[in-house]
Length: 102
Image 1 (cartoon, rainbow, N blue to C red):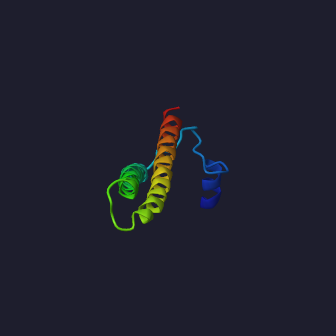
Image 2: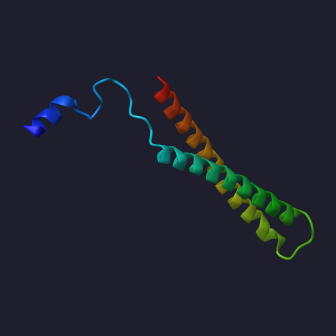
Image 3: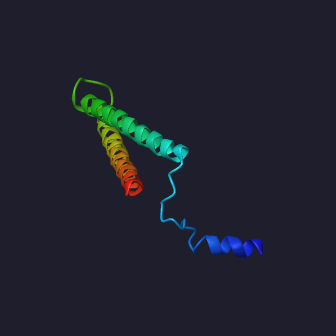
């Protein structure tokens, strides 16, 4: 009898009857913001490392200068990917915020 009452109160899919969306848990939102900051700062740091390797590969006379250019390419690619991922995280945060507002 108790199980029948529970199934009668909640529709299939588990959505609340009042039509209101469940609020996002604060710890989940905090995790998304932490991920965003981590990706943003990591991407900027990696692009800084790429700039250094490009400079070291073509700037002053250093030993094995030709090895710095490939490292610059690697750091630039990973840094750009990190910044794109940070942008997607921002998009997801804003999309969830607008979904909660409506």
